[in-house]
Structures are given as structure tokens and as C-alpha cells.
Image (cartoon, rainbow, N blue to C red; front, side, top):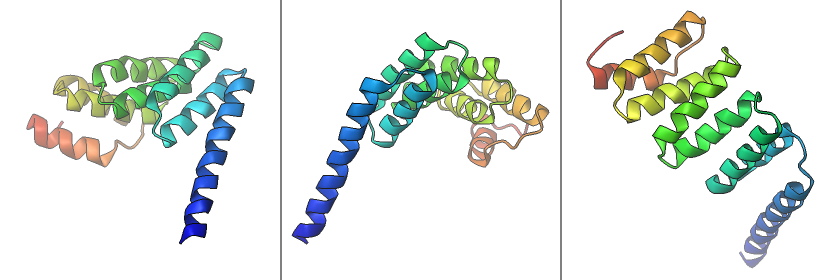
Length: 146
């Protein structure tokens, strides 16, 4: 048992070291978003937002930076901050289905059902699949089918 605990501790420490070293060398928007994704996976949402901010400073037209910043806000329950980030990601890349789905979920969670339905219709208009959890919850909460 002690060896297994030691291995887990070493694995965690190596991950922290990798993130620390990577932060020093990140120079592109893509690299900062990669760090943000790692931050999200490790539960460090504040650092993820910071890394997305840096990515946006470098390249304000990089849609994934807005999407993952929105996702970090979403994970924090800060839906009103998440929505404009998801929206910006879809403005930059109108085919960004993941951003649309999380935008719709955010609208649903703040009980703005009309806006959530607009997002659903946009996803469908693009010929993409709406997240079934979003669609089912929206139908139930809004009392509408479309």
C-alpha cells in the first residue's frame, strides 16, 4: 500500500512540475490553451482562466481560448461570465458546436429559456447534434418542444 501511495504522490508531483515548467515556456495562444485544458483537468479553474486570458492577448481571434475560458467559468457556476465567452467562440468559428452546446446549457441554468432555444435552433440549422441533456432539460424546464 505504501508503494502505491508513493507512486501516486510522484505522479502528482510530476504533473505539477510539468505544468510549472510549461507555464514558463508557453508562448503561443495554442500553448496557453493547452495549459488551460491541463488546469481544468486538475481542477485549477482560476489558472485556466488566466491562461486563456494570455492566449486571448496573443491571439484575440483564437476561438478555443474563449471556449475554454467559458468552460472554466461554467465549471465555477459563473454562467453569466461563461455565456459571452461561448458566444465569442461561436462568432469567431460559427461551426463550434461544443461552444454552442455549453452556451445553451448556461442559458438553461440561468433560466433564460428563449436564448437557450435560439442556441438549439442555431445548432440544428448548422446540421449538428444538440447535446441530448441540453435538449431534454430545456424541454422539461421551458415546457416547450421547440
